[in-house]
Image 1 (tube, rainbow, N blue to C red):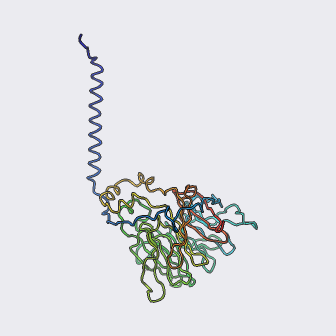
Image 2: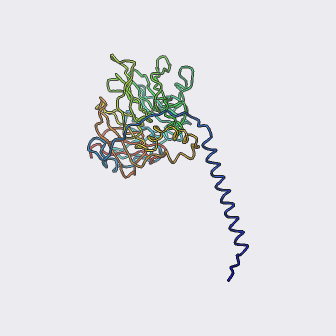
Image 3: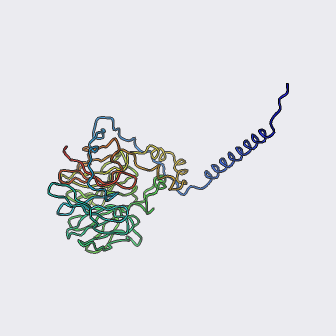
Length: 377
C-alpha cells in the first residue's frame, strides 16, 4: 500500500523550516552584532561586601515598624525630601518642579497641601536658612533660594569654572554655609553609571558671604544625601553606589580630610537627616540588588549591560518593594533599622524625625506621597 504525500503540506512545512532558519540567523547575527558593539564604558572591578542579613539578630533584623505608615498628603507624588519651617509646616518638592506646603491643625491632622513655589526643574534638597529663605538643591536648576513669597533666586550653577551637573541634597551650617552634593557628571541617574562603577560625584560648599562655591570632596560614588553633625565638626555625604556614608572633617586635627562613617549598608543610601539627639536617619531607596553586585565583580557583564538602552533597563533598576530606613548614632554605629517588608511603602529617600513622628518621602519608582509613623508606637 503506497502513501501519497500532499504537495501543499510539504511546501508549507518547507516554508516554515526555511523561515525558522532565517529568523534564527537574524537572531544570531543580532546577538553577535550587539556583542561586537564597543561598550560605552570601561567598568571598574569591585568586590562588593556581602549584604547584611535581615534574618540575623541585630540592628538590621527585619521588623514591621514602617508597615503602619499613614498618608500625610499625596498631592506631592514623589516627595524626595521633607523639611519643616519654624511653625511646623511641611515643605516638600515633587518631580514636576512644584514645592508644596502642608500645615497641621490643632489635633495634628494634615491640611490640604498648597503650592508654595514652582522651580521649573526638579527640587530635591530643601532647608530653611536663618533668614527664613528656603534653600533648594534642584537637579536641573542648581542651588536656589526662595523667599517667603515664593520668589526664586539662583545662588549657584557653576563651580571651578564648570557646571554643577546635578545638585541633589543639602544642609546648612549656623554661619549660613551651604553644603550640598553634586551627584554625578552624568547629569542624571543612569544604569550605565552603575555598570561603570567609577566615581563621578562631588561634595560642594556655598559661602553666602562671598557667593562662591568650592569643591570639598570629589570622586564620590553617586554623591547623595548630606547632613552636618550636631557640633558641625563634620559633614556626611552618602555614596549610594558603594553603600556607604563618607565623613568630611570641618574642624579639629582631621580638618580637610575624609574617612568612612558607615559602610556596607543594606541598600542604596539616599538622603540623610539629623535629629535632636544627634542621630542620623538614612532613607534607603532600595535594598541591595544582587545583579548589581555581580556586575561589579564581572566587568564583562557590566560592559555588556552598559550597551543596553536606558529605557529597557528602567524596570531592572526599580527599587525592591521593601521599605527601609537606617538610624545611625553620632559615632557611626547602627542604632536601628525600620522596615516595611510587605512593600506597601518603598523607594524611601528621606526619613525626618519631627515631634512624635518619623516623616517619610519617596522618589519616582517608589510608592507615592508623604507618609509618617509614630517614633514610639
